Amino acid sequence: MKKFYRSRDDNLIAGVCGGVAELFSVDPNLVRLTVVFAGLLTGIIPAVVTYVAAWIILPEGRPE
Image (cartoon, rainbow, N blue to C red; front, side, top):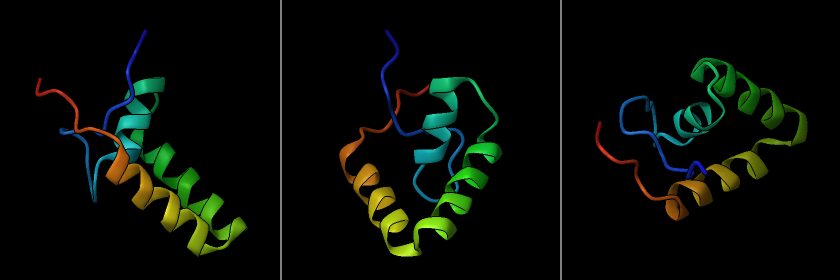
């Protein structure tokens, strides 16, 4: 079973989107675009709060 970590290698802000991309084996830019699009649809504040919460809760990934 894979564990969900923030990415150490593929991070622009905190590595949350990079970690999601590694977990599902997809392109990190696709995950980032999805997050931005979802944020625009639902309002910016919920997306920012969710990202910051993931940044605080998720451990940083193991070095590779």
